[in-house]
Image (cartoon, rainbow, N blue to C red; front, side, top):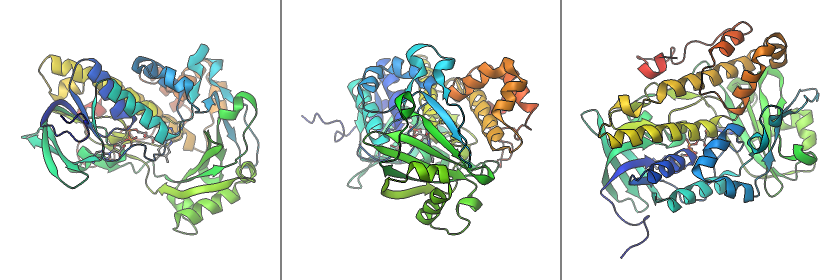
Length: 430
Ligand SMILES: Cc1cc2nc3c(=O)[nH]c(=O)nc-3n(C[C@H](O)[C@H](O)[C@H](O)COP(=O)(O)OP(=O)(O)OC[C@H]3O[C@@H](n4cnc5c(N)ncnc54)[C@H](O)[C@@H]3O)c2cc1C
């Protein structure tokens, strides 16, 4: 008998999940716990590299409900207590400690090395009863009329087969399998940012509880660098700025990154004794969204739905948060034998509203006339809501906060309004 699920062939399941990253692994864990036959198809063999290392504190509740806190506490991932901004001239802000507003352990989170973190999450899903097929990619979702009914798998040797599923979840990250297949994925012209990043061994660390902080180095023209300490004396460093700025002198990713690091004096100082390890990677177009994110028999979560900007480290939180919300709706849909878009996507209006709050804050950050200290000074009654945004607690009513924000920075165009074709009803509710 073949006991290795990765090589066992299957023909049907309750839920087929495309992608075993954090979003897919979390969703599948919740659904397997609810008794559903849930199968993850992951194209890579874990551990595999991934960008996106800084968590935000509001992930704590999800890790708790997943049962992952003991493993995270026992890990070597640096503990993140705070975020600090450093101006181009080297002036450092007072660190923003999450413990100022959040009591106890929830005020701490982690800087995660993604190959280890993602493996931890996928193994946890497996241990929770999820069937995981690694080195198995999905090249298309099967539709009958407009309802998703399964997936076409491609194994490492190129063999294709079909797996029927009651629900298909796209958790494929930036690959956006359903979004590309149905022509739903669209760049966000209002948020045109590029990024280039690399890893260094031996970068300076701050003492005490600041050792695990995320430091943001601001550069002229509205761009910035992240500096994220990782295990084994490694640090992740990346620039986010307009593509015209990053590639102003050369189209070469490594040359552009190296030049910009050298130009940012406070950052170069942190790296003065460090050695770069591995390649420089990058993305020339960070932001996109899908103008429809669920349908009959299918739903998107995490980066497969949308990605805006790394500035608030909201990506992993939104992947895990959308996974948990979608899992509740899928469980409800399966129990009621109704996998319509209306039931599967019942979580979407609230999630889009939360994403839109993050989007407004991203626009505020890149508005040269806006400053968070000035906002907090003018609207002290909204300081707590501002902090809620920075830790990720945004899937709730934030209308008073966004109204105040609009008094200091013009709101961006309505979500999805500059995307061709009609927008999804869920998004229109924002
Ligand atoms: C420059 C940059 C910096 C970032 N920094 C941060 C940060 O500091 N903090 C943060 O929280 N987020 C950050 N992010 C965002 C973060 O990386 C993502 O939000 C997060 O990884 C999304 O998780 P996911 O599970 O949705 O997708 P992913 O983690 O991308 O997982 C998707 C999985 O699907 C698999 N897959 C893809 N196609 C197929 C296929 N056809 N068949 C089968 N499997 C497939 C992939 O191999 C992958 O394992 C950053 C992103 C960028 C671009």
